[in-house]
Image (cartoon, rainbow, N blue to C red; front, side, top):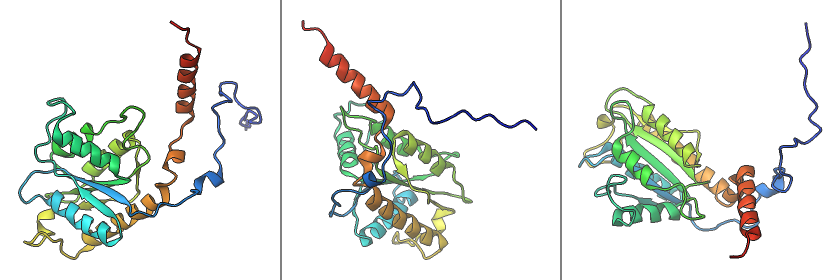
Length: 245
Protein backbone atom coordinates (compact mmCIF):
# COMPACT_ATOMS: atom_id res chain seq x y z
CA UNK A 1 0.00 0.00 0.00
CA UNK A 2 1.36 3.40 -0.93
CA UNK A 3 1.86 5.86 1.87
CA UNK A 4 0.10 9.19 1.58
CA UNK A 5 2.47 12.08 1.02
CA UNK A 6 2.06 14.96 3.39
CA UNK A 7 3.92 18.14 2.58
CA UNK A 8 5.95 19.83 5.28
CA UNK A 9 4.05 22.49 7.23
CA UNK A 10 7.02 24.18 8.80
CA UNK A 11 7.18 26.89 6.15
CA UNK A 12 4.55 29.61 6.16
CA UNK A 13 2.67 29.91 2.90
CA UNK A 14 4.06 32.55 0.58
CA UNK A 15 0.46 33.65 -0.02
CA UNK A 16 0.15 35.03 3.49
CA UNK A 17 0.49 38.74 4.14
CA UNK A 18 2.74 38.66 7.19
CA UNK A 19 1.66 42.13 8.32
CA UNK A 20 -1.97 40.99 8.61
CA UNK A 21 -1.44 37.41 9.79
CA UNK A 22 -2.09 36.82 13.50
CA UNK A 23 -1.80 33.63 15.54
CA UNK A 24 -4.86 33.17 17.79
CA UNK A 25 -3.89 33.59 21.43
CA UNK A 26 -5.50 32.13 24.54
CA UNK A 27 -4.96 35.30 26.56
CA UNK A 28 -6.91 37.35 24.03
CA UNK A 29 -10.01 35.35 24.91
CA UNK A 30 -9.95 36.74 28.45
CA UNK A 31 -11.51 40.23 28.55
CA UNK A 32 -9.51 42.89 30.35
CA UNK A 33 -12.74 44.11 31.93
CA UNK A 34 -16.11 42.39 32.27
CA UNK A 35 -19.31 44.26 31.45
CA UNK A 36 -21.59 44.61 34.47
CA UNK A 37 -24.85 45.62 32.78
CA UNK A 38 -27.57 43.01 32.13
CA UNK A 39 -27.31 41.13 28.81
CA UNK A 40 -29.29 43.06 26.17
CA UNK A 41 -31.56 40.80 24.11
CA UNK A 42 -33.73 41.79 21.13
CA UNK A 43 -36.64 39.50 20.28
CA UNK A 44 -38.32 39.22 16.87
CA UNK A 45 -41.42 37.22 16.02
CA UNK A 46 -42.94 36.47 12.64
CA UNK A 47 -46.72 36.87 12.71
CA UNK A 48 -49.30 39.66 12.81
CA UNK A 49 -52.25 37.53 13.94
CA UNK A 50 -54.22 38.76 16.94
CA UNK A 51 -53.50 35.48 18.72
CA UNK A 52 -50.04 34.85 17.33
CA UNK A 53 -48.36 31.77 18.77
CA UNK A 54 -44.92 32.93 17.70
CA UNK A 55 -45.60 36.13 19.66
CA UNK A 56 -46.89 34.19 22.67
CA UNK A 57 -43.79 31.97 22.60
CA UNK A 58 -41.59 35.04 22.27
CA UNK A 59 -43.24 36.72 25.27
CA UNK A 60 -42.89 33.52 27.30
CA UNK A 61 -39.19 33.42 26.45
CA UNK A 62 -38.90 37.12 27.30
CA UNK A 63 -40.22 36.44 30.81
CA UNK A 64 -37.62 33.73 31.24
CA UNK A 65 -34.82 35.99 30.03
CA UNK A 66 -35.88 38.70 32.46
CA UNK A 67 -35.94 36.14 35.27
CA UNK A 68 -32.34 35.28 34.30
CA UNK A 69 -31.31 38.92 34.62
CA UNK A 70 -31.42 40.04 30.99
CA UNK A 71 -32.80 43.31 29.66
CA UNK A 72 -35.28 42.50 26.90
CA UNK A 73 -36.86 44.43 24.05
CA UNK A 74 -39.55 42.89 21.81
CA UNK A 75 -40.01 44.43 18.37
CA UNK A 76 -43.58 44.70 17.07
CA UNK A 77 -43.49 44.10 13.28
CA UNK A 78 -46.90 45.73 12.70
CA UNK A 79 -46.59 48.56 10.14
CA UNK A 80 -43.04 47.58 9.18
CA UNK A 81 -42.92 48.04 5.38
CA UNK A 82 -41.64 45.42 2.99
CA UNK A 83 -37.95 45.85 2.11
CA UNK A 84 -37.47 48.36 -0.72
CA UNK A 85 -41.12 49.50 -0.44
CA UNK A 86 -40.07 52.43 1.76
CA UNK A 87 -36.87 54.32 2.53
CA UNK A 88 -34.74 53.22 5.47
CA UNK A 89 -35.76 56.47 7.19
CA UNK A 90 -39.20 54.95 7.85
CA UNK A 91 -39.92 55.14 11.61
CA UNK A 92 -40.43 51.39 12.02
CA UNK A 93 -37.21 50.63 10.14
CA UNK A 94 -35.31 53.07 12.31
CA UNK A 95 -36.84 51.55 15.44
CA UNK A 96 -35.78 48.06 14.38
CA UNK A 97 -32.26 49.13 13.46
CA UNK A 98 -31.78 51.03 16.72
CA UNK A 99 -32.87 47.95 18.67
CA UNK A 100 -30.52 45.75 16.67
CA UNK A 101 -27.63 48.12 17.37
CA UNK A 102 -28.53 48.20 21.09
CA UNK A 103 -28.68 44.43 21.48
CA UNK A 104 -25.93 41.99 22.41
CA UNK A 105 -28.01 38.96 21.45
CA UNK A 106 -31.26 38.14 19.66
CA UNK A 107 -34.09 35.63 19.62
CA UNK A 108 -35.87 34.95 16.31
CA UNK A 109 -39.19 33.11 16.51
CA UNK A 110 -41.25 32.30 13.42
CA UNK A 111 -44.24 30.18 12.53
CA UNK A 112 -43.55 27.58 9.87
CA UNK A 113 -45.71 28.37 6.84
CA UNK A 114 -45.55 26.29 3.65
CA UNK A 115 -42.41 24.65 4.99
CA UNK A 116 -40.55 27.90 5.63
CA UNK A 117 -40.29 30.93 7.89
CA UNK A 118 -42.88 33.62 7.25
CA UNK A 119 -42.39 36.69 5.08
CA UNK A 120 -42.97 38.83 8.18
CA UNK A 121 -39.96 37.21 9.82
CA UNK A 122 -37.75 37.48 6.76
CA UNK A 123 -38.67 41.15 6.21
CA UNK A 124 -37.46 42.07 9.67
CA UNK A 125 -34.13 40.36 9.11
CA UNK A 126 -33.79 41.92 5.65
CA UNK A 127 -34.20 45.41 7.10
CA UNK A 128 -31.20 44.85 9.40
CA UNK A 129 -28.15 45.76 7.29
CA UNK A 130 -24.90 43.83 7.25
CA UNK A 131 -23.06 47.11 7.73
CA UNK A 132 -23.79 50.75 8.51
CA UNK A 133 -20.64 52.64 7.62
CA UNK A 134 -17.89 50.89 9.56
CA UNK A 135 -20.36 49.29 12.00
CA UNK A 136 -21.78 45.79 11.53
CA UNK A 137 -25.01 45.75 13.59
CA UNK A 138 -25.19 41.96 14.05
CA UNK A 139 -21.62 40.68 13.77
CA UNK A 140 -20.47 38.77 16.83
CA UNK A 141 -23.85 38.92 18.58
CA UNK A 142 -25.52 35.79 19.88
CA UNK A 143 -28.68 34.31 18.38
CA UNK A 144 -31.29 31.78 19.46
CA UNK A 145 -33.91 30.45 17.02
CA UNK A 146 -37.39 29.10 17.73
CA UNK A 147 -40.45 28.13 15.71
CA UNK A 148 -44.08 27.21 16.23
CA UNK A 149 -45.85 24.60 14.12
CA UNK A 150 -49.54 24.18 13.36
CA UNK A 151 -49.11 20.43 13.01
CA UNK A 152 -46.38 17.93 13.77
CA UNK A 153 -42.96 19.11 14.86
CA UNK A 154 -40.75 20.46 12.10
CA UNK A 155 -37.42 22.26 11.89
CA UNK A 156 -37.55 23.96 8.48
CA UNK A 157 -37.98 27.49 9.86
CA UNK A 158 -35.25 27.20 12.50
CA UNK A 159 -32.88 25.69 9.93
CA UNK A 160 -33.51 28.61 7.59
CA UNK A 161 -32.97 31.11 10.38
CA UNK A 162 -29.69 29.42 11.26
CA UNK A 163 -28.52 30.03 7.70
CA UNK A 164 -29.54 33.68 7.98
CA UNK A 165 -27.79 33.99 11.34
CA UNK A 166 -24.57 32.74 9.78
CA UNK A 167 -25.02 35.16 6.89
CA UNK A 168 -25.48 37.99 9.41
CA UNK A 169 -22.24 36.84 11.09
CA UNK A 170 -23.97 35.99 14.35
CA UNK A 171 -23.03 33.33 16.92
CA UNK A 172 -26.05 31.03 16.78
CA UNK A 173 -26.25 28.84 19.87
CA UNK A 174 -26.51 25.04 19.43
CA UNK A 175 -29.87 24.60 21.16
CA UNK A 176 -33.21 25.52 19.57
CA UNK A 177 -36.96 25.21 20.14
CA UNK A 178 -39.71 23.85 17.87
CA UNK A 179 -43.21 23.70 19.35
CA UNK A 180 -45.57 21.28 17.60
CA UNK A 181 -49.35 21.92 17.52
CA UNK A 182 -48.73 25.26 19.19
CA UNK A 183 -52.47 25.92 19.53
CA UNK A 184 -52.56 23.20 22.21
CA UNK A 185 -49.61 24.55 24.20
CA UNK A 186 -50.97 27.88 25.46
CA UNK A 187 -53.66 28.81 27.95
CA UNK A 188 -56.43 31.27 27.07
CA UNK A 189 -54.50 34.03 28.87
CA UNK A 190 -51.52 33.44 26.57
CA UNK A 191 -49.26 31.70 29.05
CA UNK A 192 -47.50 28.52 27.96
CA UNK A 193 -48.58 25.26 29.57
CA UNK A 194 -46.07 23.05 31.45
CA UNK A 195 -44.57 20.55 29.02
CA UNK A 196 -41.36 19.23 27.53
CA UNK A 197 -41.70 22.03 24.96
CA UNK A 198 -41.71 24.61 27.75
CA UNK A 199 -38.69 23.01 29.38
CA UNK A 200 -36.82 23.22 26.06
CA UNK A 201 -37.57 26.95 25.85
CA UNK A 202 -36.06 27.35 29.32
CA UNK A 203 -32.98 25.43 28.13
CA UNK A 204 -32.61 27.61 25.04
CA UNK A 205 -32.91 30.91 26.92
CA UNK A 206 -30.49 29.72 29.61
CA UNK A 207 -27.98 28.78 26.92
CA UNK A 208 -28.44 32.11 25.15
CA UNK A 209 -27.71 34.09 28.31
CA UNK A 210 -24.62 31.98 29.02
CA UNK A 211 -23.24 32.41 25.50
CA UNK A 212 -23.98 36.14 25.56
CA UNK A 213 -22.16 36.59 28.87
CA UNK A 214 -19.29 34.45 27.58
CA UNK A 215 -18.78 36.27 24.28
CA UNK A 216 -20.03 39.86 24.49
CA UNK A 217 -16.79 41.31 25.85
CA UNK A 218 -14.59 39.46 23.35
CA UNK A 219 -16.87 39.61 20.29
CA UNK A 220 -14.57 42.03 18.42
CA UNK A 221 -11.68 39.57 18.81
CA UNK A 222 -13.79 36.54 17.84
CA UNK A 223 -14.87 38.13 14.55
CA UNK A 224 -11.53 39.77 13.71
CA UNK A 225 -10.62 38.24 10.33
CA UNK A 226 -7.41 37.99 8.34
CA UNK A 227 -9.17 38.83 5.06
CA UNK A 228 -10.73 41.97 6.51
CA UNK A 229 -7.47 43.09 8.11
CA UNK A 230 -5.80 42.60 4.75
CA UNK A 231 -8.51 44.53 2.92
CA UNK A 232 -8.38 47.35 5.47
CA UNK A 233 -4.61 47.57 5.17
CA UNK A 234 -4.90 47.75 1.39
CA UNK A 235 -7.49 50.52 1.54
CA UNK A 236 -5.37 52.44 4.04
CA UNK A 237 -2.34 52.09 1.77
CA UNK A 238 -4.31 53.41 -1.19
CA UNK A 239 -5.54 56.39 0.77
CA UNK A 240 -2.17 57.27 2.28
CA UNK A 241 -0.25 56.83 -0.96
CA UNK A 242 -2.69 58.57 -3.31
CA UNK A 243 -1.26 61.55 -5.15
CA UNK A 244 -2.29 65.02 -4.08
CA UNK A 245 -4.79 66.66 -6.39
